[in-house]
Image (cartoon, rainbow, N blue to C red; front, side):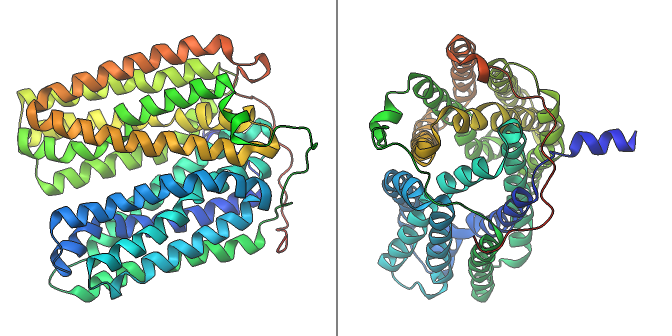
Length: 424
């Protein structure tokens, strides 16, 4: 039984991918330490208004969207390892200097540097994972990427909560320094990752964003991901005010809700990835928004009918269901984006794909916030409706997926490379 469980949890990936994911854990741990407390630092420690503090956070997203367009060609021309390394250094500088902030313009400048560095992070890391992983194991690699991200952020948030204290401004300095150090730690991990650099291709082969935008299958995947993020991931941050205002859920219970979601993803991601091997990608992907429909309706019901501990328990079940749904995204969707794009355009594909996250991450909370303020119990049924549209869209996209990519691979991996490469 134990051996069978171990096989289920083993993603069977090359050693270099494991090392890259170790760097990802360190990186997300640092993000988890700082992100929940950034507005608190700007408002309570530096005395900026909440409006200005919110604009600082929004500037990071704006910088990611702006710089993200340029990151794709850089990944394809210079290689993902170099772009990832440069992005990590920029993020370390932007975050590491935040303890020196005294005026709003300084915060805007530093967060813009951090955001520009972050813009190159996801396209380059995702491209590097695709290069290092055999095609038949990419779904497992992207599933593991989600595990490392959630594990790091969850542990980072818990650690940051133990360190941060408004009564001690120095505690926030510790948060920023630790976060900056995690970026640099990931940077040094890259010295042990091998990357062949730019991919050679025929001169007459298309090598621009025009070729990406002409890919109709990718365009459908982009729209689907926009719906997933707008009606799913991006609304997660609206759960706390809904739970607190409509169901009298305490701050500690709200923190527990997020922790439960994280733990579910960490425990369920790899077994689910293994279970859906050999299944049709789009049918597996349609399960994600289908489960989110149940989550949002249960959340709405809990806030409408109950309060306190009972509401907390029902909301915990709802967000656990949400977490199970999230586990289908990496192996079914992210891996497909890596597979459909030509190797020499993969950086551009992931850069455009990242825009669906950024744009939907802006639109979802913006519209959702207005709905939550005007009619709080209408938000979650509306989100469930959009999830239903996304589920149907995923199923209708299935006939357009190339036959060789229609199913999630189910094959034995190549023997893992035990010796780590040099600097590459």
